[in-house]
Image 1 (spheres, chains in turn orange, blue):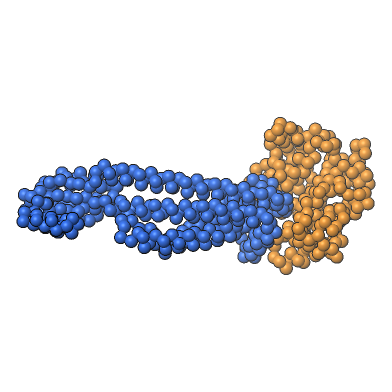
Image 2 (cartoon, each protein chain N blue to C red; image 1 turned 60 degrees about the vertical axis):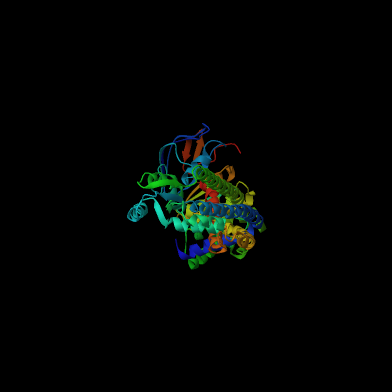
Length: 228
Length: 294
């Protein structure tokens, strides 16, 4: 599903974010990306949806060559990937339903299909009854569920989450993790960058630790490995 | 692109105009002011150009035929001059006709000369391109049986230099004004886009193509340009109707005339409208470029 060979990334300001990274992630896996701040986690995540591209090395996401992908082909890549952020990235002017439907409108899905699919995913994340509410009327956990609904509404093969529980209280974080588990069980690859020790140590999955732009640990069912 | 997507883009562009009403107002005002300036300037320039053309077209070459020329020679000369490449028209006037004109202009005393007419037979020649008058005149002067050629030497060169300079300055000013307008509008639209960069970012993250993001903004720019051209078109038309109303009777019989109200005002209106639409579209296009790199 995802292959990286000797991926090196140097930013224009001279900072080396990834220093020859090698990794392979299979379809249907659930992977935690852990490591201290500034270790290269965000760059790793951003490369998967081609917000950044490798300075050198090879990288494939679902057989799409990220290093040579042309700008106008990037939308095609992103339609295969759902992305969830710490700050949710919802449009405050649109209600819950519209925020989710937005992802299908931009890929020119049929209106009837949009309606059906949006209601399905809102049901899945437990927000069907709040479809007409606006993001500002929702709690943090609910907003994150809307953003998850948006990320899976076009049935992506991979779901990428950058600190999805970072802004949530522990209890709400668990609700979100349950959702991720269900999405993963349905066959979607989940890649999640996190600092949440409790979650990583409880819901055991493959753990990839990045430090100084390199993978320092890659253990199936491993623990968080850092102090709180 | 699918039809319903286009409908969506149109709806989005209208919604955005309403939603960002303050920015809409600012952009439309900027377009209005600039187009009004451009419109008034075009009125002035086009009329100056018309006056210049009228003055230029009034320039003709007076060819004096020598007294020894026979009737046949005169006919030969006429066809030779008429067939010259740079010549638009040739009018022959006999010395008797010349005298009659003089008598009409200066009074009966001159009719004394009817006994022995001192004038020459004359060709009035118009150059196809008035600016080529000098060259045509020199060429004619080289023919045989030509006594003299006059075309207001010295004076018309000065006139032409003056008119040409005027035209160039006008063109440069209009271009400069247009450039300023585009800059102003692209900046104003950039502010609306900055306010919505989050929206653009999310669109790009969920897999929207650049054109999908761009089209609503470009349509919005087009509406702003259209809205901004309404007042200038109205004011310029009103202004010009007053000007022609005032000037037309006073200029009748003069060497030059102003441009007729119609169709000139339709052309100017179309020009203002097109410029509004163009700078609106161009402004949006330029402003959105850098926000698409997500």
